[in-house]
Each structure stands twice: as structure tokens, then as C-alpha cells.
Image 1: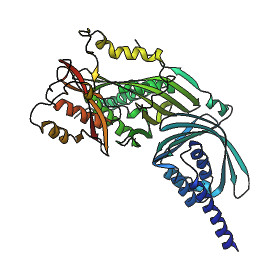
Image 2: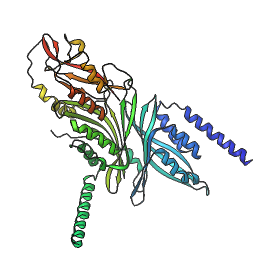
Image 3: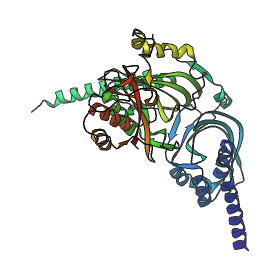
Image 4: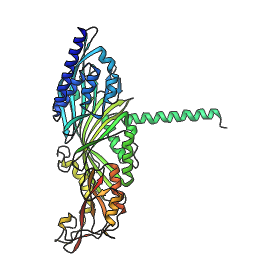
Length: 178
Length: 293
């Protein structure tokens, strides 16, 4: 019975991935949505497969972890290294992402995407749910008739500073000496 | 044998000097905008050292186009990027200026999406090449100082000019006039042809001719892996033959740093051409060539 359940779950997983691969990645918005879907997949192999379809082979994935005292830690690496290193977290938690806002700047074959995202992490053992807000930034590039993620970096919200302010942009005219 | 006490004092001084320098550097990059300025200013220095402005795992992605016009991305570590810039600075004075910056920040993470004005001045001939790009820079506060975590560079494509909002005339006019001021004082001797105009091959009465045998030019081009016809894996660039027959690189928009250096070496290796003729006078004329990626 358990074996049947595992096979059924695996099939659901494969079907989700197949749908992700079907998404039209020549549309920038689809790439970002597919990223959140892929990053929510529990199974290591399926998650890796889904992300490999979205990232450029040299793509990188970095995170700034902000603590209460406003000190921060930077983690850098390839997307593959991130998948490997985050396996422990994914073993303990079921992760979901809910995007609340998105802003995009682009020119020709590059785009810079800013997202405000709720990350819900449900602890598998206790069922406890933990929320955090993230500001995620995607650098994406267009080649071979579709978009690829070249780099993603995020930072978590820390009280008392609302992360909503991250999307408040300043436009600066650089002064050039005569 | 040196006095051990003296050695300890020397070491202490070295450590103290190191601390003062690192503190000064931290103060120098106390905001992401200052870190951004440091980066662009550093590029204008002879043999720039820029890798210290980046985080350890930083990358730079540059979008370039192959001869079929298809985008390709090249990824560099800061050390590799520094080598590219240093190689370019052997032949050119590099001046990169951010023009309009769209800035966002939350605590230890900041983003700058900006337009950049690039001027390359040939150290030997003084000729300038202008280029514009859009760059996306990510900054992270790392051990008290703001450092660059990632850059994506997209050079302007001639067929798809960047919005005026990112290059407002008010800001670009001083940069443009600085480049053209030497040319603007040239007197106009004739109404029949424009002395400042760079003619295309089909516009001139006699095209420029390379001296020597029939194979002299093709042999030279071949030795630099350059062709006169577009073919896969080759990127276009333009050289201009002046009225006096001297050649210079006038458009290298889509070339990488290494390609620019190679194209520059090719131009330096050229003999003086017989210039193009228009209305019985020698005129400037441009040639499109293609260099291997």
C-alpha cells in the first residue's frame, strides 16, 4: 500500500515537472512563476530537474540572511550547489512561495526582476508553519528563443524594517564633471 | 641577523597599516552608490585592480552577439573580468560613466540598474570609440563594506537604441561634446564633399586600396582570423581609412575585450592605405570586417 502511495506521489511529481517544462519560457513572467513552482518541489531529483530547466548552466543562486540585530550573512554558489546544500532544510520542511508584487526593468535580451514573496515553510514533523517575507531579485537573459535565470539573490525581512520599502526606487541622475 | 624585537615592531606596523587601509576602504564604500562609483572610477585607472570590489563568489555576465545576431552570454569571475579590462587598457584609455541609475535597497542588499556611457580612447592615435550599455549590478554589505555580488552587461544594439529616459540629452550632451570637440573645430574647405563624413564603400568614386600585392591584405586579415565576409562564429567591426590613408578602429561595439585588442593589433599592423576618392579628393571611408569569436 505504501509502495503504491509512493509511486502515485512520484507520478504526481513527474506530471508537475512535465507541466513546468511545457510552460512557454519565451514569456518572462512564466520563467519567474516556474521558478517558484520548482523551488517548492520536495523531492531532490525532481527539484533539481525542474531548476535545471530554468537556470543558465552558469547560473548562480545567492542569499543574504538578515538577523534581528541587523547583522547579515551572505551565501553564494551555483544553483546546483544550493540545491545540494538546502537538501537538509527540504527534508524537514515543505516549502511554498506566494508572490505578492513584481517589478521588471529590461533592455533587449536582459531583464532585472524584483519580487516580494511570502515563503511558507511547514515543518513536516510538527506541522508548524513558519512565514517569512523575501525580496528576490532575478537577473535573466534571453537566448535560444527563451529566457534563462542567470542569477537570483534574496534577502529576508527583519523587524522593524518593512521589506515593502525594497521596491521603492530612487532614480538618480549621475553628475558628470565638466 | 635582525633584532627579533625590531621584527615584531615591523610586523605590528604592517598589521596596523593593513587595518588602517581596510578601515579606509570600508569608509570609502559606506553606501552602494559609493561602491558603484568606486567600480566605474577604478575602470578608468591604468591597469585597474577591481577584483577587491567584488564578493568572493561574484560573477559578471556579458551579453554579446554572434555573426548571426543571436545573443550569447559569457560569464567571468572578477579576476577574469579584471584581466579583460587590463588587456583593453593596454591599448585604450577607458572611461565608463553611469548616467541614470535606478536604485533599490533593503538593509544589506541593494540593486542598481543603470545606463553606462563608455569611451575608449586609443592611446596611440587618440581616436575615440563610443559605446553605451545597460548594466544590472547587485551589491551586498559584506564585513561592513558594500561589495558587488553580480553584474549583467548588455551593450546597446545599433538596431535597438536604449530609451532616452536612460540617456537624457541633458546628461549625455556634455559627454558627446567632449568627444567631438576636436572634430568640430575642423574647417569646411569644400561644399562638394563633407570632410567630416565617413563614407561607405559604395558612396565613394574610388575605394581605398591596400598597398602591396593582391594577397597582402588577405594574408594580413587571415593572420588575425579576420574576414571581409560575414560567416558563423565571426563578429563584425568597422575600421575607418582616413584621408591620409591611416586606418583606425571606429566601431567595436559587439567585440569582447580580447577581440578589441586583436582588432587593434590588426589595425596597427596595417600599412598606410591609398585613401578613398570622392570628387577628386581623398575622403574618409569605412570598411566592415569580421573577427573570429
